[in-house]
Image (cartoon, rainbow, N blue to C red; front, side, top):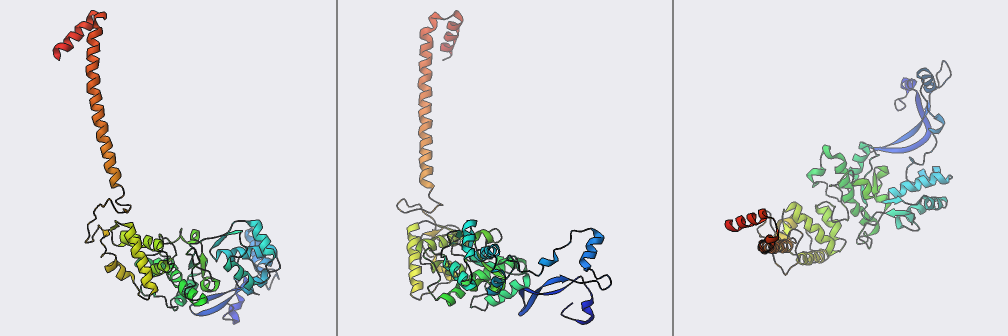
Length: 405
């Protein structure tokens, strides 16, 4: 062990090299992570790993690449970029990683390489990608969010969460499905995604955190945490976490104060109405019977928030939404009534179609019955009329039918 020194350095097959791969945050302390070099056997003057490979017949390692910068692993900062800046392929790999950490995905490899060949400065690269300038070779996800990087260690993630909790984000009210050691990654996702808008407002200014389409603006430094977090596309986090990521999408964001803040601050009544409809269905177990009324309510909430009248989810679920006559069903006091003059929520929109379908079935049944009776009588008359030209057995059968009738 190099940290102990003395006789502890007499053991092992590898020693520390002179190239620092990255740094590691471990519960408030920063440690350097160095490359490895093979140790020389004092007796044979051979590399110990090569001797073991010879004995057991393994493939061995390429020791010469262990202490060379790897574009897929260097830190995403000016130091890491400086290690690979002289090779276009390495720069393309580095830029790809930057795009993935800024909520995007490379869609045109040729365009990426043409762009990477002209990159010479990390800060200029970061600014260009944050502003999406000249990046038609990439797709930028409007629902990207700040989440834990699954390639980071648990200690580093824990340190990032502790830092995020010091931003002003309320870490004492984490949803039960996202809290505790059993939900380690979900807990990290919730804290990092919920605190990101707070950091963004501090970096870009309050009221300057959203793009025109409602998506978050991007500031790389607010969601990196020395490699423990990434501002990731939804294709990255949704397969891993479907319930604990605060996003700008009203149909998927958490039904919490953090999720509510992320939606109303976009200033779009339709998006807030979608969010409230989920609250009514999933938390209040009711339904909305008037979509227009819901949208008007959403617009008034946004206006009140902008005028300094704040709302919490506890208030919205406790009094505001349950007190509306168009919020009904479930355990709520209001009973849902069908009103033909008002737009219906999805739970009642089938009513007119159901009645129309039932009416059509009844009419069809009456029509078929009348046709059957009339055609039956016509058939009997035709049979008696033409039976004279048929065999005697036919006439006997016809007479017996007449007698029985």
